[in-house]
Image 1 (cartoon, rainbow, N blue to C red):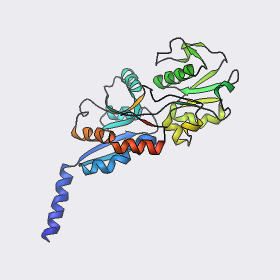
Image 2: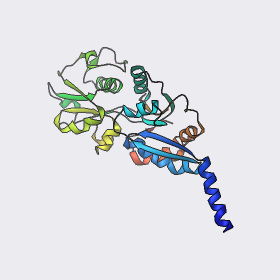
Image 3: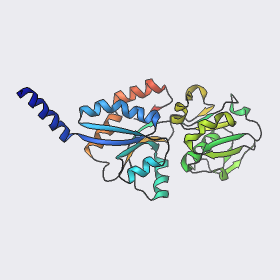
Image 4: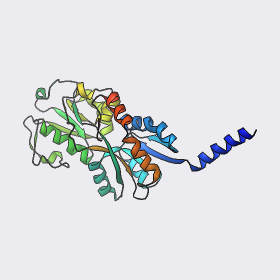
Length: 256
């Protein structure tokens, strides 16, 4: 009986001191990476709860409104633009990985096969839309007025030799229209969810030197909490680097 009471007391003591973090994430690869580190965090007294989202708006809104503790789905340029547009003050805790943006098509095998007047879909958010145009510029498909401007829009296309028609859609929906258009620029997390292989299927893809590092994001009031520091450390562990390299085989690249 005394042993049983001792066990109950130990469990109660652990529960009383256990920290909890609820983190928003898009399913692939962010939620998968977070779920991978759950056991390690549990050993350090942090209960990690992962809430999956398929859009890029609510994860930031809910963290800003303190309904969630943090999120893991975006890169710094997107966060900067979101904060500016919405008046939020979310901050980066740490960078984790790069998801190279790629050009995909169900109709052609090479970009130079794009026909005159072809329809190309790009993300409709400011940073990923600009990022898509920069990749097309780098691939020689178009020329931008300023190929260093990450917020370029279709209005900034200086040369469009094939008179491509650009459609802008929410990033999460782009894989669904891939068979209906000539080419589409898709974020790697959505490409993976659509069972596309970035290494094999992308007609053009960002290099590992991409500045678009995906980050763990929190608020100024909780970014330095013990639980957040433990999560950041776990995301930078050798085990996570190995997990990313083995599971995604270059489609997701560790940034640490």
